[in-house]
Image (cartoon, rainbow over all chains, first blue to last red; front, side):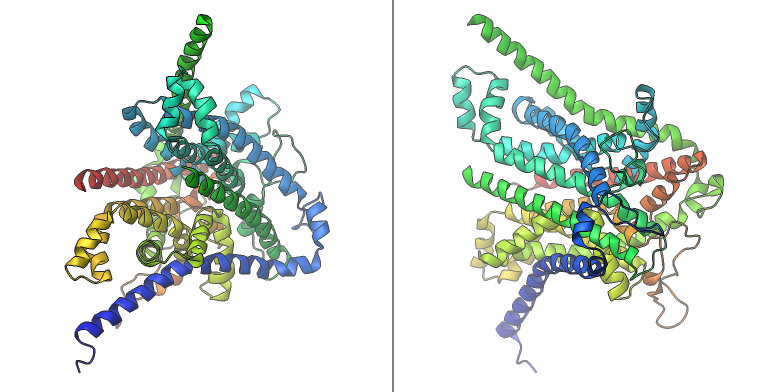
Length: 299
Length: 299
């Protein structure tokens, strides 16, 4: 009865726990494998019927019409447009915020400002969508009469504000990690804080800041609800920010809201779009991961 | 020369003010957002709003099925993400040897944290809804969000464990404790603050998440509650509710904000206030725990 007692029971228990913990860690690989598998598996039906060339170069995206066209470029244009607007807001604001927090702000103020800025990323995206559609768009229409009710501009700006914390926190970490003696060297030469920040800290922290920018891009590409609510779900081969557009993500939402049956060509389009979105963000994420690694190794 | 110094000093001061203003942009947006929501939605925030089902008439519609759905989904999400996430974190910090496989898991988790949430929706649609046949159910929704917040929990657990000095573990081993005993009685309790913070931040992210749930087919018009977990027959506990269809607060908001009638926009604002308060409370609680534990423990 007690063949498992004492030491051997203990060691079996230890082994069992280690196995469970290992499986938990390995499950993350299972998730990635699952994502890649399901995206390819479900979109294979699509790519059998539509040539990749037509998919990547066509300028008409009307998969739900009776005469469907499958050119993904209008979605690319919409995604590119909203992402660019978001970055035009998030990069300067995020970088200046990070510079201020890391080089200028007194410690007490920094301790208060940082968690408050993090809240910007905690607000549910659907609430930002409401804000873009029913607050910012009417406000902008007072200055730009041509602005249509659904447009790329207003969700782009809101998305930009939303990703400021991602950009600022990663670049601030990078700037704070620059060793003090390098900064002190600059101060000893009589440089001001601003000169030190621009000529010493930013070049030294460059790969970290680049990583922050890329994280910002990846966030903006994958953001869904703000554009689904405020940009109008209309595929549009344009770069005019005043018109309604559709992004990769909001197309997936549009199809999911309807009654498209499982296994049809229309159904497989969302996975084809998902493949494109996944690999673009994957590339961005891996690039930013290695930039951060490189930065960490240096200091 | 003197002029140059003067200009530099002037620029330095100017930048300090600009930086502070940029930080205030973020805070300003949060305040405007709140004021806007309250002006639009506060009149609708009555008890009846919490106890009514959605309706075709905006004045009679409420969020009963939405907040019940949100709570149930959160329950499943926590159940799925906490053991696996904390387990994976412990494995990577305490057990994993430094080899290519560990590096691979690490890159993989960093990448999963950056995968757009809607891709998790596609994964769940392919695997949980169709392959495993869970359907568009509470179980599917909870597991989807569980996968989504897994990287957040893992990363937070690792950071918390990494902060514990090696000497604590050595003291425990010196008393004859096994590896798991050391983790169970020393490492885990001391890192609990950081782990809890990560879990709460993860759950607050999940409660506001809309896109993946829309993708797996969360319905927007649910005029019933899931079946009760307690049944009158043996064995008195029923798991039927796991397979009921559901809606959650953010999906309900999305539905209301997408409608043209003004009355539904008021509902969306009111429901947004509820969601924002929940999210901010969770974040505030997380910040509180972090500071409390940080003050209590000194090495």
